Image (cartoon, rainbow, N blue to C red; front, side):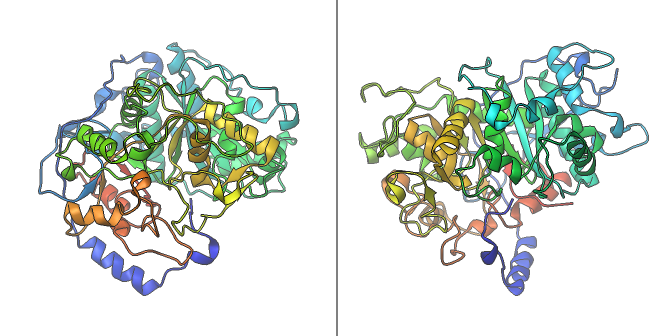
Length: 531
């Protein structure tokens, strides 16, 4: 996905060439710490979760771990242990090699949707049950869609991969997608279900009304093995659902298709939205569960203020508790507590208790999980700072934004956004949508302080001065933070050398090193564009 307006995307080729030369000759280094909150699997393998009868290739017993070797300190943001055990590195070869094409593996015969369903049912059914998801997705139409109750589906989780019609399914990418599905679903007894949401660029195709056109597009744009877990949409689909919203492109409305998904598939209480250029160096399911465990453990006291800054462990004795105490000492009782009011807007979230209940929120599932700070866009000079529609207070509406639309959202939050867009035409760009509605409804939102590594020589103090120079309530913000693309173009800063951002080559270089047998702790790498 692109995050820049068309007129802003050109970068001088000479500058890029110089950057790449510098990048390829620089090494990352890591230091490892004890994990914060780590999820541990207790599930047992089931024969129903084998891709083929008796085939052990998709089982977790095939995975190999080795001790991570400690190296010299490197400035980093976030904690190396928040996504899993930082001392145990999952080896890439054990994850990927069995998923490449070979004479022994006919992947065109696999139906990943069927495999996931029988794994969740723990019953090896032959022939497998009929796949109903395309019918559920396409009917009824938006005008006939019944009111969807917000009661949960027992905590079920969907993982939605956002892709598009011209995505190139190369051998490397196919191996990664197969490994991801196996790790997310099959190796954990189908506790998560994986789907593709496929953005079809041609708006003339009548995907809802024309069965033959939908089937032809599915065959044309999606490899055979993934078709029974893929759902197609185009801007025509989104306009029918959200006629009061003027923008339906993926860059500005990354969540509209997900809102429809949560409307159609009411059994999923939480939905992870992942991008095709995201890579995990740790076990995918366990990484996501570790992130959810961290979010669940967070108190709501000054949570938005913690969300609004980068956690740099070296400045807090490698203790997130000490970091939280420092935020509390700086903010006191002036932090966000419950819904933030704005004109002509009714909050539907929980009402807060007395501020003396400091542990409010501990044990509560987060309605929103993000991997970048949630900051107030006002005064940042962000290119989308003034883009807000349908709110009575206009640009004065309290808001939050977090770049990179890789998130876990609750069905409740998505339905609040759906209702606002469909009935009142209230909308913001993708990176500010879930964050702002969570703020206004008083829902629990958590930024997970995952490890982001930077190349080059910087002290922790120097890095802090670069990335946390805003006001106390959102220190990662302020005037022209370098992580954002501004109205005046790129802002100088360390992000081109970061392992997680919306552009750059550092993440891809780390992924290539990982695939070439370099040991890395559990990390998120984005973007990885390798073919």
